[in-house]
Length: 327
Image (cartoon, helix red, strand yellow):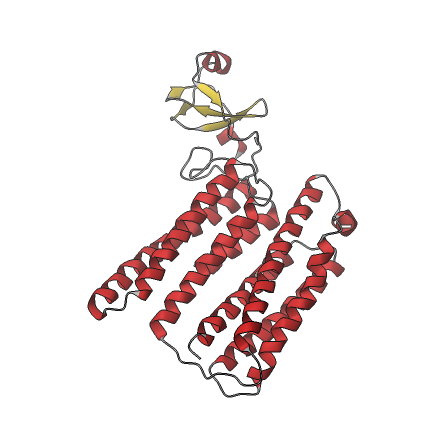
């Protein structure tokens, strides 16, 4: 479910749907989002509940109490309608609205298994005295709530730069917490590797991958800004600031650091060999997707794949680090 949240969030970025729902947790003041512009346009004789949001005169308005629409100007002067002050975004796009709504819905549904996991781990700790899974389940639920709160802040701030990156990192920490829960339950013992300090290179590879992930998200924010200015995709590369080249060149550092710990594991019959094989596969596909992303003028469709591969590689590194602690 959490991986779906990451994927859905990436699709939101890809389609530019971040402000599809201008309020949070509802959408235009509704539990079920509108599908037509008439639903967010003031209409005489229409009944509106408290908190209902409409667009009028390029401004987002909020109903302060229940009202049957009569005359908008009179109602505005009487304080029935107040302008939404958290941001000035006042555009309705049904596709964007529903993409963002589905993203939120997936995030909300993720809370159900998270709560179930918390309850089950508590009873497991109570019965068997194993409290580590419960501890990480609490951490997992905390980050889930934190990401939800950050999602609200992202919307309230009209996609403030770097806030989206923090929102994405929160989802990564949720996945790490799940890995910690699984690891604490399994209690796997891994055979130590010889000839390479696996822990050092694993940690270095994970740190570089995380840095690359953050840099890539920031590059994406720059791309979004250029697209908003009307720059065509074939011209995006020329419009990016010079620091994006650090992201491009950083991929080679990630590749080298990953191969240093992966190569020795591929020659051994250890449990971590499978993790190394998956890591190598993800690196290969990720490098290809990155090169393709540049050569094909940064097609939007590749963005979710590029992000998921990076997150997957980081999680594999994290899992291997956990395993190496017991080696």
